[in-house]
Image (cartoon, rainbow, N blue to C red):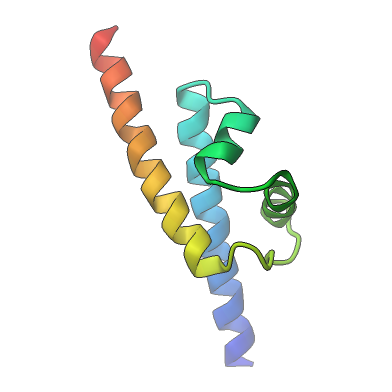
Length: 89
């Protein structure tokens, strides 16, 4: 039963990272298509990851470790953009 808990924890972390990404994207008014492109996802992969965020299975592409790396990198960049925009206004 422990492996099932490990998978659930992994899913929860991935969903929280996607939520964080969407929150940062909302703050700078990034469109859904720009969000997809920032993560270098096809439309099909984007839909699969959005379905995952809503409780669906983990998509096959990109693999979860790669998706988490992309989310971290892009979220960091969005934070910098958001901070820069906040300082200008």
